[in-house]
Image (cartoon, rainbow, N blue to C red; front, side):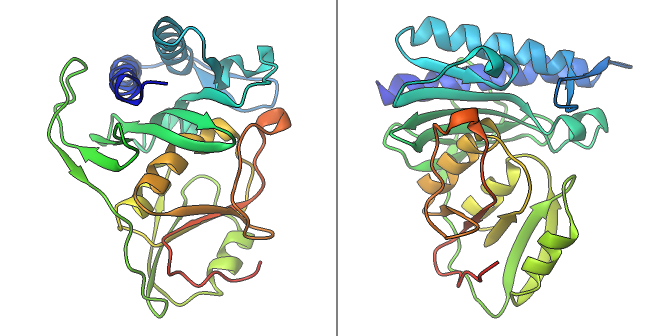
Length: 265
């Protein structure tokens, strides 16, 4: 895999997909249907999926690709694959709350090594560069030309005053009980994979997820966080969260800045 080419392609496709998503988002109305698992899907999910999947297949014809909207047709047996959530945070999109993202990642031997997370309604884009270090790009997000970037890095956490981020749409009592084990200075809610990016930039120290996620929900944010010095581990035994699992379902997990003294569940 040519990582320089990958970075440019992922960045461009994320911006192109984001533009299509915002076109639908800004319309007076849009249709919402339910998938077989009762999760919502919109025309924006499907349009963005096509843009990204077609673009990745054209650029990397020999690399396996998994996308959320096409997952039922995949039987993955590859050590290296691209994984896509074209619109993470569909509920945020439907409710017009803005915290939705476009996510594209490369997984190698179970580890997300490269990724892009683009939040078009928030005007924020995070990705790993050609050597795997994470940056945030400033607008205006021209698909043909990269803008100014700044390196991002996790915080040096103070365990007596942690900054915590949690899900906006999937917050529950179990999550609150676990967060209650820590000394928390401030807490914020965010949607989609933006939570990983807030830890990556040092805007938060800890993101616990005690709820259902799929690999395409987390891979790009995981890659960005890892490229900024952060970690993602399973909730149950604090071992690294790995990818390429049968069915693509994740266990509960914790994303954090090294230095956070993790508590048992």
